[in-house]
Each structure stands twice: as structure tokens, then as C-alpha cells.
Length: 71
Image (tube, rainbow, N blue to C red; front, side):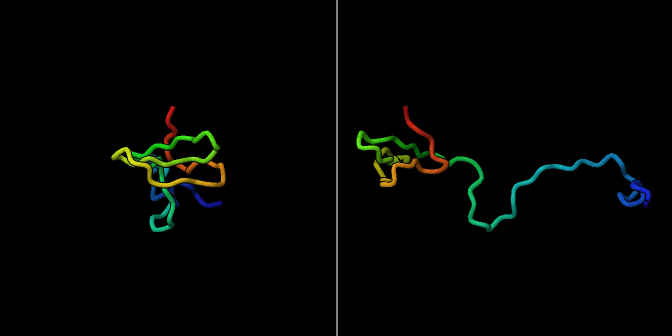
């Protein structure tokens, strides 16, 4: 078995940091900013934009992903 110190360039004091997935893969990291959602009495979810106007309605009774829920 090879010497681990030799493989790592004789530097055993290295830090392996976590990183986000590669960019350009159409995934969001974290929550959507300045948007909230509220559930209507009929069960549909409505998304509200930063100016307070309603933007979109989801008709499958599932909340939007990554959007903060209003109380």
C-alpha cells in the first residue's frame, strides 16, 4: 500500500470542504428570496411576489418548492 503522506504531497494538514453541486444543472441552492406562499381555503397554493401581488397558483394541492409559507 502506498504511503498516504506521499499521495497527498507530504501535507497532511489539508482541509476537505463541502461544496455545492456544479453550476448550470438547473437546481436551486437554498430558498427563493422575497417570495411567500399561502394556502387558499380550496386547498390550492398561491405564490406572492416581493411587491405583494399574487404571482401563480398551483392546482395540484402541493406547495411550491423552496418558497416560504405565510402564517
